[in-house]
Length: 253
Image 1 (cartoon, helix red, strand yellow):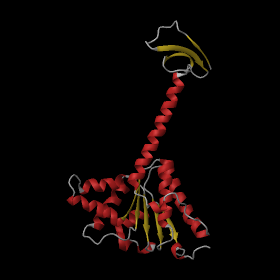
Image 2 (cartoon, helix red, strand yellow):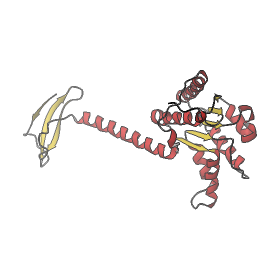
Image 3 (cartoon, helix red, strand yellow):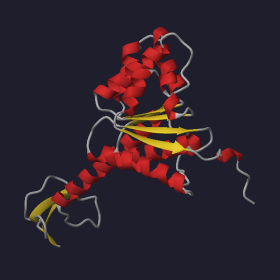
Image 4 (cartoon, helix red, strand yellow):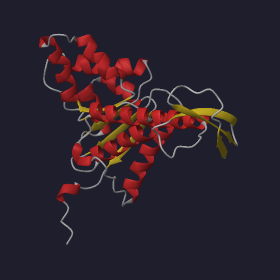
């Protein structure tokens, strides 16, 4: 790039005009304030592109931070990777990847069902997936247990400014909803109704669900109801976590 002072050009008081040539945008003149020492010509178009890029990066960063705050992911598992150290674990990870690949291709109803006993890494893998969807796909994600979701909706009954409908919509509108312990809803009169309503809303608006359960797949309907189970099985990816509890394994020396 080349530049030169062109003092003969009328300038805004307190500024000096400089003209230069940008290989991409051609010749242009910019005004630089006199108090800005050692400043030379710059391409205003290139500067605008840089500012737009910085603004875009700032917007993405702030959006990501906001998504993380609302996602309520378990802090224990943030930044950790599911250890696929056996053929069965690699199969589970492959199913999770197939679910992600489906979300990348098109917007549609899909479910990832994680089945296995306590301590087998279901929540860990779900959290890893959630972080990928937030960081790489800029999707809004919410993690909660079925008990927590129902309790939050029911809390609206006694909270000024909140309604049951508004809370159901909140859970229905996340891009991806992770429901942990979906088989362990609170023993309250309308718990099944609320779970069914959230799943139905998401099903009709093509918003995917990750469902985590300690129960065998063929027993799930007894805990979530036939309607929810039917929805969960449509376009589903099933991960079977059929290995021992990680927490009970002996400590490595």
